[in-house]
Image (tube, rainbow, N blue to C red; front, side, top):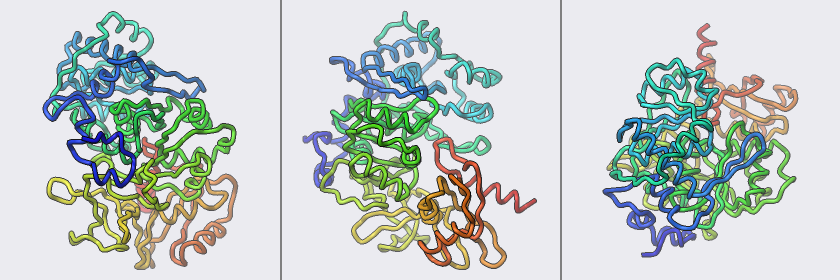
Length: 515
């Protein structure tokens, strides 16, 4: 059987992909498999090589190999067993990317416990809601966060500092992981506000095989890549696509730790010799706005984005700066990656602005309200076929005659104004082309005549007249697709994953209307 990692063309992806081919990339089988073994221990059996590179917000860097990752995660697994942590018990980990973070993440799964990564910027209420929901036996965090979460009586809080790591050192540096493939490995909370707790997505160990499909065709990971994903491993992109997928294929990966700085990210991409970059659309926009890209040279050959559509100016910047095609990777935490632009496939003619085509083995369609498949060019909801039914993504879109999918905004981000259907994303992209606009978010607000009108929230670099912004959009889209109301703000509300939180803006407007 041809190994899927040996193939890079779109034609080969269609010709050779199979579920058996995915499983052949791993040691485990459909009965017994362990994520920590697949991502760490099996690669530590040979000569040592780099596993993870970290760029810190203070400008320093660090890297460690598979040998260190295997040894420290084994020590942590033995430490858990010594404390009576049993298979299936939850272990919450609220740490920035670091050796303690990865030791705990993989060590918990080695021991058969369930790892629960938590975002380090959660406040006490956000942590408490998640702890109450998943009822972990332990919460590992740093000293600063421990001071704010210490009053959560339902969980023991452990400070994972240098002293903690030294306490782990006497434990054996080998641990034989033995878990069923369908045993629970990880709980992952999607981004949301502290007052509206999103449901935890529960992943078994076999999920590492499923995510390899996204690595092969969404981020284009192949042996020999120097891969980097600056997204936090508390979220799906940074965890599955930035950490588990590349390590599961034996590919070194890197990320950013601490307060994000786009100039330091650019420097790390150059210093680390990164060849494959996968980032959120927001990261590319911030790198563009930083104005620092010309200070360094880069060796990136494959490049992808996810999270939300990228605006055309950021796309142009990325491709001009890094010298390669910026490829879309689309999916959700619930369904995984379902559409991709096949980075590294020279025979795949990407279409800027599209979401690409379905990854092998996945059926995707645009579905009308009556359940039928929409013909090319007709808007509906993007859905994926799972378990003999269409599963919703809650995103609208279209598919063209050549099979490329196009994003039409979240299903609840569509604005109906005077009978016109308007996509928030389209208006935001037009606003971002204005030289003074740094960030933009658009929602619909009630209007007694038109039902709803477009309201734009703008972060600007310098004062700009409202009429100028309105005319700028009107002349680029159409006479009805422009913000009739404009509000200038210092910052936009974001989800913890960094996406603009339009729901927060809608809730604020509703409260303002009610008062």
